[in-house]
Length: 261
Length: 187
Image (cartoon, rainbow over all chains, first blue to last red; front, side, top):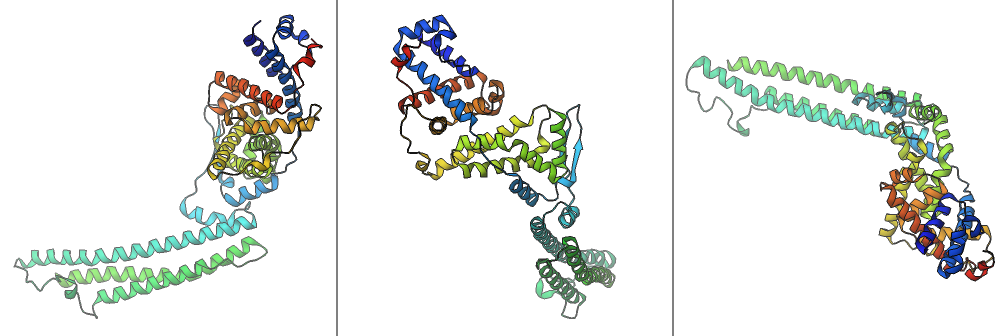
């Protein structure tokens, strides 16, 4: 046996954890090499100590209880996901995937998740309020964008119809050429823009109210419900104003078209 | 994989607090053990172990049911420990406080021996340390370790070999190994 073979043999013994005190018990060849090689004797003794150290090290126990911390944090981070998890099977190897809720569901679920801890519910409520604010802002943007193209579109339609029906060259004053040519203050467009401005103001008020902290109550669901009901009641006049604005816009467009033709 | 594990995972995915707690209770000792051995610092190990479970819960739906849960969790733990160690290097954390003032003692008690081994482990290369812990503490086979570490089995064997060699040398240098001549009488 040479030194390399000796070392390999020692490593095998360490692998199996069957290191013995006496090399003679392991193999006569190993014992023979050990008696002839000083460096391998040192290695043998080191390996024996290492084996003892590994045993003592492995037997050390650590007292730890992570349950409360982990579970609380998990529920805080993802209060709605576990309750929506769905099972999907695939060729004997089923996997479980969380269902992705649609936008309105995602906005409302945190209020109604039975597994949400009180702390988690607070975070979820804040997220929901921001979601509502963002959607209100998006809606306001949509209203303003839909109003501006309508003005231009109606002008263009009126111009085309006017040109077609009269079959004469259009005078330069028949269409507004720039902003100063826009209708006077008493025109329907000014009224429309005033109405749209009112809608936006109401949206901002509703957004502000939505950003208020949810009132504390012993029963979280009850508090969430009353807060949500309050928001709905504030949203109702905004909704009506929006409807009126759209109606007005539509009628104004039609009236403008008929006046042109 | 036992049905028990599958049921446990299903329970966790359904949001059952009882199942989540049972999951943590079942695996916290091996996960925390790996973290504390890798990091050598109890508080760091607790933070990382907690992170491991949170990540596991977030990714339970991706768990391959062909594989037992324990190695899967240990793989997450190994990755988190590596990340934490690399953060330590970047932040140049002074780890001197981990060095105990242990006198070299030939008749060291088991606890001193274990403590010395832990110290030696912390000085090993990260790959060697991980292989050593997974093999000797978590009692995983070479193939399982190879899968966790992402290296060939032969490489794992070499790393384990070198780890033990370095650890044995460390114990000898620190005076924990009895003189070679002493043993000649026992051969």
